[in-house]
Image (cartoon, rainbow, N blue to C red):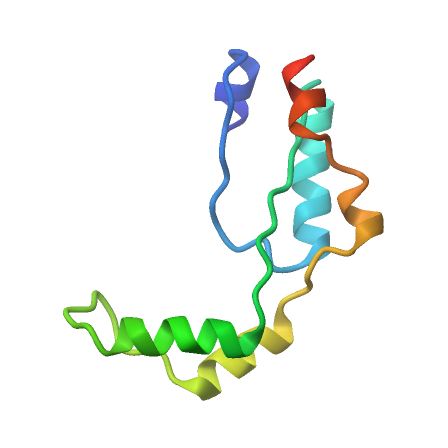
Length: 99
C-alpha cells in the first residue's frame, strides 16, 4: 500500500482495524507519506449485525462455518468504535481531493 501511495494513487484498506491504536498507526504512516487519510465508519448495533448474520447463515453455501451469536458478542466486545475526537483526526473527502 505504501508503494502505491508513493506513486500518487489512492488505496483502500478494507480490513479490521478494530482498535484505535491500529488506526492511529496506519494514519501516522500515511501522514508521513504526505497523503490524505479518510476513515469511513459504518456503525451498526449488535442486534442489527446479528440480523444480517442470521440471514447470511440461512443461505448456504458458505466459505466458512456459520457465525454464532456468542462469536459476534465476543467480537463486538473487543471492537473499539471510533469516537468523534478520533474521527476529527482524519481528512474529509473534500480535504483529500484538495491534496
